[in-house]
Image 1 (spheres, one colour):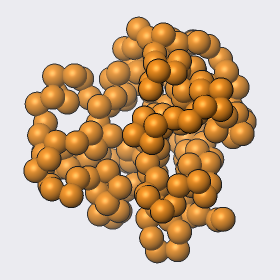
Image 2 (cartoon, rainbow, N blue to C red):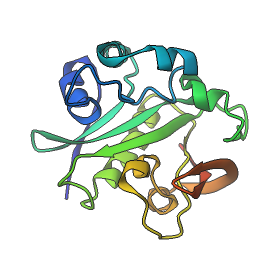
Image 3 (cartoon, rainbow, N blue to C red):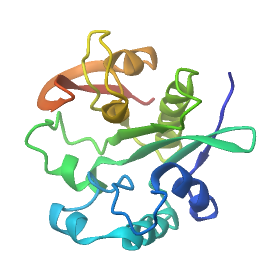
Image 4 (cartoon, rainbow, N blue to C red):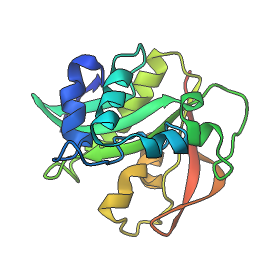
Length: 193
């Protein structure tokens, strides 16, 4: 199935909210900010403030991610940005820095119910690579679980799997000390010519 990939810019903030926002706008859900913000700032932002922060990010020259569409329907989200902008990864002691390249990171996938298992995550990952390439990134990294084909709980599958990244041309570059859903996470990298 073919999906159209578009940047999550200010004009598409409503679609970002469909995928990342809670039904109750006063609920404090992640909004894909947990890895982006320092811990204290992340904890202090609540409910509608989180939505406002993401809307601000959507207005920047480099949006906070990309969206997948099936026709006019938004069906998926992928967080992708320069690693230096992502507080948790820029300062991580669990996920190593391989070198001084200004790499981009893919850290979050979200696929709407009813669309899972239909190639949305694969299309998003390829779209993330193209998005990073369009912004002259030298390489893209991801930090998926190395689940060896075992089932990953849907709520924890947001980091992707090693197999997903391998199918997109990424190779394992390093082990990490990070774990998700009981599975080790690995650093996968793809150089961009």
